[in-house]
Length: 155
Ligand code: CUA
Image 1 (cartoon, protein in one colour):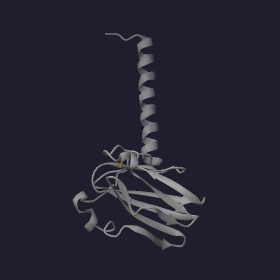
Image 2 (spheres, rainbow, N blue to C red):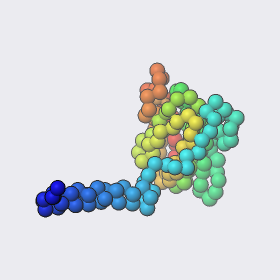
Image 3 (cartoon, rainbow, N blue to C red):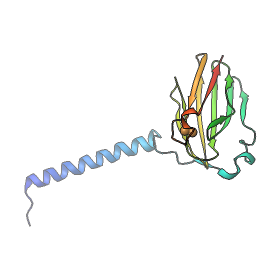
Image 4 (tube, protein in one colour):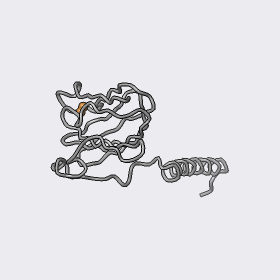
């Protein structure tokens, strides 16, 4: 069977487009590291309270103006609650859930993460502006979902 020239041209063009998309996606995933997190740290969700660092949640100074916030999320709150950090501090949040999927969204920042039981979520953010930052759970997690919130005070 003989192929028309038109067919050959269009086949070449569509193949080229597919290869183009694959190259773009591959470049984003591997060179720009925009792919899904691959080295996700896991934890036994039944033993969060006994597993470091979640056996001792709280705000810790880990360096020069650098802080670590170890926090657990559970229906329907955040532990610790109402945390305080100094303005200009670089803060790494280390989060996990003790029950179902919760959300960790900090109003006025780009922080918007899913916090799943069995997984450790890490987010780093520098809080340059003083103020009260509202933290809300943005994943439906049950009857008290809409009251699940806390505040980060930066001063
Ligand atoms: Cu926790 Cu919604």
